[in-house]
Image 1 (spheres, rainbow, N blue to C red):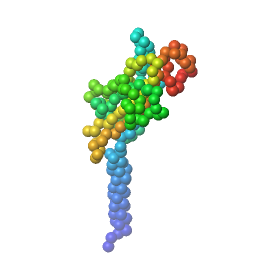
Image 2: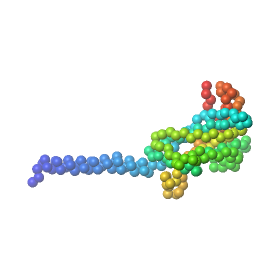
Image 3: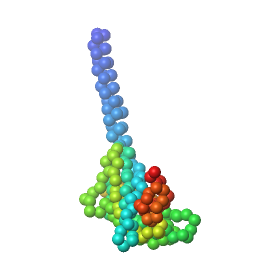
Image 4: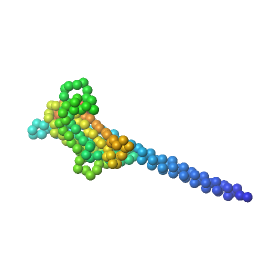
Length: 195
């Protein structure tokens, strides 16, 4: 016959093995699987642009875009497809349809690939990265700046063969007219002014 202490020790050992296996599954494999299946996500914002008059009367506009990766995996960007486009806004139409920019806004006046020249561009999890671009624009006209970031298809493969896309928009009106306590610094309409 089995003694009670042997049965108790055997059941305790089996319970520890099952409990350890369950803990590994619950907190190890499931967490690893969740992180592996998580889609890349970015949160974007922009700073109030700095504007400086050039000798020829045009304005250099410093656009700084900030992107935060709140996810648990790095986000790799396609350095050839991620771009900044600047459009001159015409006075026609009641609103701007982002799917029909050139028809509704007007001609693209500038295009820049801000990540070109890097071997790769990666946004680490839990960090905020900054992308700076400086288009040269004419004074007194209104512009729409659109920064589009596209995921690297090789690092973030999808079954449909599509890329993840994030974009931010900013309306600019470069001018050297004083406004809102900015002195003789150029202004940017629709954005908060410093006091």
